[in-house]
Image (cartoon, rainbow, N blue to C red; front, side):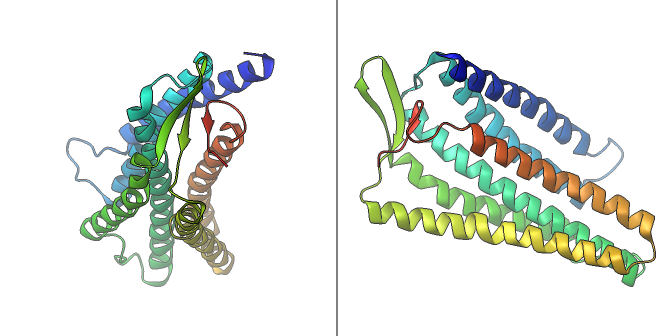
Length: 247
């Protein structure tokens, strides 16, 4: 490994460690106390933590190990698990962030316009159904990775975990549907919710309370997008490293 590879491996290892510690802390802090019941916002944050921990333990950690090893050494079976978990956790995290943004927007509007009256998303049953639906969507888009992967061992000293679709048309169709339905639309919903929050804060007289709520929601959204940006930046490109996709 040259200096660049060592820097990337160490950076990814540090990100993995910080992610494991941070998401375990988020999950533990979101658990209800011994004398209290599970609340909607706690369920949403627990779900977000679980989604991120799947990435930390089943994607980032093996990724880091493969970086230091200089090749994919976990076999073809785990190659499919790796790809599956990567898309599963990413999609679930995006939907979790969307639900959190919409939930706090509804709570904010409800407290201002209806005197703190219950809002639609402040229902464990409804939120549980939405989360189940988001995991189902994530699973559907992730299942193909079990069938369209293989370990390319053309070079005895270098093995790659690669995606092998039946045709280029199949690849383009899958990627278009995945990026549109599991990424673009929910991310657009997150951005729209944030804009509505900002608009509400501008029109409200209760500045301090609104600013606090917006700060909390902004922190969640910023953390999610920053993590996604770092992953996209440091994940090896198709032409480099052990994780490649045949062109």
